[in-house]
Amino acid sequence: MSDTAVRVVAYDPDWPRQFERERAVLEQLLEPWLDDGVHHIGSTSVPGLAAKPLIDMMAGVRELDAARAAFEPLLEHGYAHEPHRPGIAHHFAKPHYSLHLTEPGSDLWRERLAFRDALRRDRALADEYAALKLRLAREYTDGPAAYTPGKRAFVGRVLADAGLTFGRR
Image (cartoon, rainbow, N blue to C red; front, top):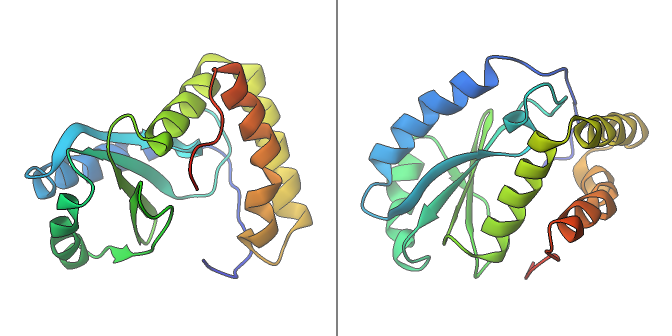
């Protein structure tokens, strides 16, 4: 994880187009392992929401262990493997993009989609989240080490309202 300051910016209407371009590439690249497509998640997937300028994506794969064969094609496409939530996801990053490979129905799958969908449905909730993120980015200028945990209670509340709790980490 980077030690650079967290930068939260105003919503960019180009983020959905950036996602769609990368999704098209990833769906071809991941086709042998893909189950349930590539989804835009995270703050850049919520219209009007301030966010870190990073397109978060999640791809459903049929079998997590078998998807290890996708590592090489992803590396060749510029992604670097960054372990995150071992046993339920493979995480990759490249400039401006973050990708999780996980099985549909995993804890990560359910959490990320439920959180995104709740923010998309409720503008007041999205605005509350934006205010929290902007405050945390101002307060924690040393990087994501404190910024990310600072969002946990909010995310937990939204997940609880959706009938979920945090799954395996």
